Image 1: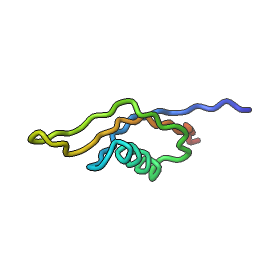
Image 2: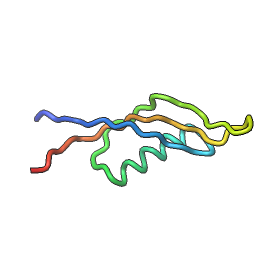
Image 3: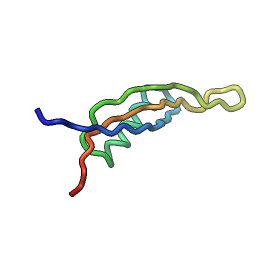
Length: 71
């Protein structure tokens, strides 16, 4: 098996419904511009609050993809 290198980026997804949907939004958006996504790791969950009410769920996600050098 040949050696591979993966790049990891951090994204924040948001949803008005749930943390799961927030994480999914981050991964699905990343998949529109990045190829060969491999792993997504949720590293932090938080909420945006306005006037004592939850306005949005936020998920910080680390996404890895295969790094390919253009020649």
